[in-house]
Amino acid sequence: MKELYSPIYKLVSSFQNNNIYIKREDQIPLSFGGNKARKASLFFQDIKKKEADCIVTYGSGSSNHCRIVSNMAAANKIKCVIISPEEEYENTFNSTMMELFGAKICMCSVLNVKETINKVLEELKSRGMNPYFIQGGGHGNLGTQAYVNAYDEIVEWEIKNKIKFDYIFHASGTGTTQAGLICGQLQRMDYWRKIIGISIARKEIRGKQIIAESIESYMGNQQNIDLQKYILFDDQFTGDGYGKTTENINDLIEELLINETIPLDSTYTGKAFYGMRERVQKDGIQGKNILFIHTGGTPLFYDWLCRKRVKKCILNI
Image (cartoon, rainbow, N blue to C red; front, side, top):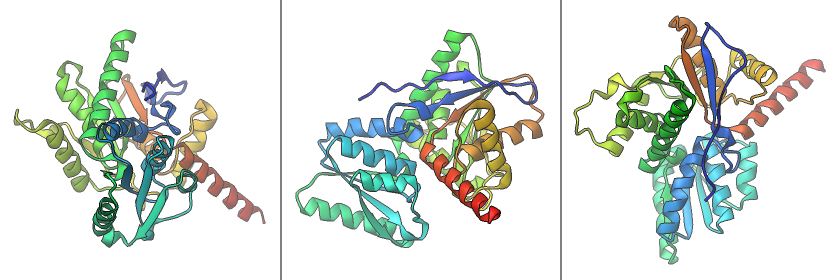
């Protein structure tokens, strides 16, 4: 398994007199990187230990998780089956790569996902195979562990560079990235700071509930910790939901690419960076060290770019 590490560096631009840093998880050297690559690396270590010969997972046609899992499955010569809700499926660069990697896409209604997963697992077992199931988005304790590791990596960088971050912002989806960061903080309370997840789809009540469940699953709640004190989850920038964007977010993606040479996507990182900037202004945060975690999604950036080009061509007709 390749060594996992992603660089941290300061952005040229700033706002509200804050020092803005970025952790480029998209530069993890596994299938375009990202938080899903960090999680998948731990799952594949476990897959090898359990000698699984088939992987079953769940996600939409735009899923970074499914693209990375299917790529790593192909590299390891392991069969991969992806259960995907037909209501949410669309052709993307991610879905094209899933097909390239030889993953079998099993479409079903979103209402029948659990039933379909169980049916596929039973069918594979009946053939004498040893399937390994990964929850959508890499959800679960291994996914949480990946971002405990990332938190430790951040702290080590702070110590080395004599800098302490006052805030960490990131895109919050299935919740394990944020849960892992919080667990990392709870284990190293001398490095406390506000960790703020910008929701890309879920509303606050559900989002915080899932994160709390992931933290309790990973750590237990033996110390009777008030988790709500640590779970900072902002659902003001979800727009019309998962995969939906706004002109403000589109403008921000253009701005960051031109001025900082950093690609963001409109599903995850574009929303999160925009949400961070708005939150900093709204809360009057000034003169602080702020870290933004770029959680990946480069193929989705190209989907955004293609849509933008098509829209421009239509307007020019």
